Length: 489
Figure 1 (spheres, one colour):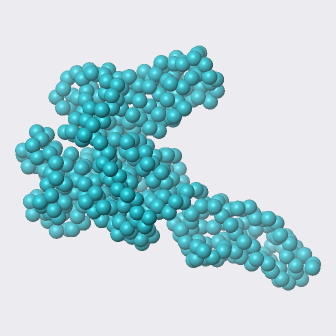
Figure 2 (cartoon, rainbow, N blue to C red):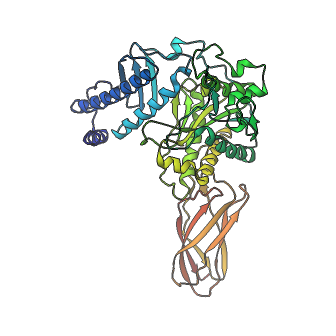
Figure 3 (tube, rainbow, N blue to C red):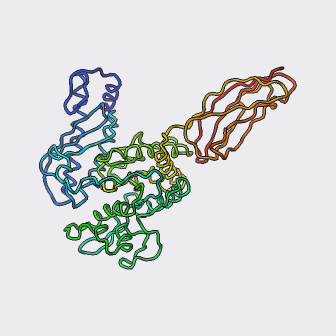
């Protein structure tokens, strides 16, 4: 805690000076030791995680870890020494490296260093350098001026282990909440919202049938995308069976990761949105995150729009005003985002390994708000609109002649969901009981939002009005006040 306090204070007061080990931005020489300690702490944490990961796969070795921080870019580069190079089996360890990135981002934040993007190198080279053909980003599909379809991929689902043929869910459930069965419920909500509000045809990567899958005798809706696509396209093994000769017991997990964007490419979908709940060994890590692939930076505006809109919608709900939602999207190396030829993002709605997030994930209010945020973020991006807070413009004080009225136009910034409700309340009235509050609903986004300020009395007086608007999704603009004076003409 002392180190964290020192780093936070330094981040606020340090002047430029000599560089520190592992930190690319300049800083005062007397503070370089503090940053070096933080870097060393992060290196020890990363090395420990990697050692445990290798031990689980039967490999006993120690791999060096070097971390460099770019303070100006709020980024981190992690370079692994000899002895660790993930390959195609295991999808290049994305299910290990992404949680590592989350934990290092978390620990850096606790030390006062805000980190957004994390890049992994292996003996100074990226995975793309080692596997240029397999990890090449496919040629991007031409973006249509009028999008027509989306693929919603709700992960993960049952796979069959080899050679035992035992059926297992892909994700752990440390607190009893199973992502494999939870995510499709979120996908159903998002499908309805995109079809209703964005006007797209939505395809699902997993079956929602309650009938039994004949091969496993388990519910179809609990099966992975791999099996859904196998049933739809039995001859397209290139879509769902990319590693038939892999020695990995859980090779179908790798096939399932690739099957989802393969399906999006087959459909020619305009956007691929993958829904997950996140997980981590540490129960302290929590919150909402959105990822785009580091080799597809053109997808970042979509990811940023979605995380911004999710933050607006989630925090508008009672009880979720301070729910942790990242300020910006993050780079990642997820296969789902890389393989899709269309704009592709991964939405990590919350952490199923954190008790508070688990409670939120099971709350229909949170589910609805988070998915409304995803749809709104997509819609704003698709129509070229910026995600910005709902805010009322100031209203000038006015004078109204006795026994007459005048219209007051209410203007605002942001993108409210109509219908919106305008509430005009009494902040102060010189004759209590005479001033009457007003509530009006506006259904047409193209029509002006206004109300009539009247003075029906025969005596002069003043009233201080407090005005706010509330949209259909519960987003409320901070109220503004103005004074109305009833005067003799």
